[in-house]
Length: 297
Ligand SMILES: Nc1ncnc2c1ncn2[C@@H]1O[C@H](COP(=O)(O)OP(=O)(O)OP(=O)(O)O)[C@@H](O)[C@H]1O
Ligand SMILES: [Mg+2]
Image (cartoon, rainbow, N blue to C red; front, side, top):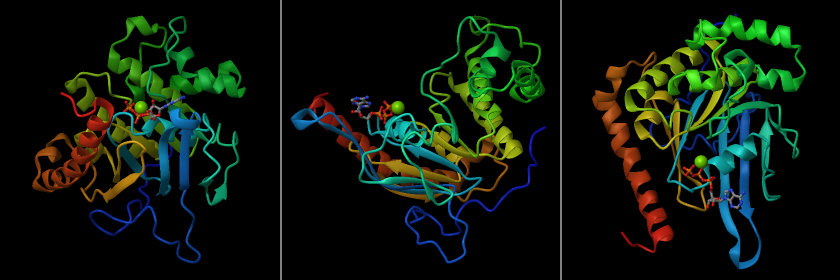
């Protein structure tokens, strides 16, 4: 059974480019679900060292849908891997969940995540791919399968439970991978460009479907994307990262009403938000292009 669709207070009330990431906590206020404090990640040593992420400060409240955008190579997946517990952060900073600092390794299992690459196993059918995480966690197979079968219609996969990945469309494969993340009853879901490989039409359908699922299952989502329209359409906030070393450039609260339908992308409000964010992103994309090509092209 999906949890109730009751909406919680999500976006901070301030408008436009905000200081949501750094606003001081009010006494007695519930701590954010996730807080990143001065987060850094450097790879390697000496002159060959690459600083992927630098001084990231970000707060995500329970129930929020936060989209993270930024140029290729700016450190989005690195940040995702640190929050997912797959990669230790450098010692400079900390990751807090519900106000408590998380030690290295302790984050694994606290969030559920869908990495940038599709990780369905060719030899497992839809249900067995979906329950993989539950199985690893120790849930008995029969119970895990029963939960997956209950969720199947919500994920548009009813009747396909015995199909193998090669028998599915791209959108269906993504829904199996998403179902795997939703089957974990975690407070927070991390999605790294889940629709990146889909054609535009399927992608638009999947975005609307994801908002519907999110409204029903009410999880907190951190969603990485290159696509600014996708970020504005989905998010309560859009956080823009600078070119590498990636840090937060701006954090915009998206005050578009929900539920959102396809037509909202042509509204003057949407276009105005997009104009503002595009300026910030394009500036960073240019810097990234110059630093990785020497300005050629
Ligand atoms: N394990 C690693 N070892 C060394 N360098 C790494 C490692 N992982 C990432 N990097 C480097 O860190 C930087 C950020 O990479 P990351 O994958 O986080 O970028 P991204 O923003 O997710 O890019 P994209 O949008 O293309 O997916 C890149 O310069 C990359 O080469
Ligand atoms: Mg990435």
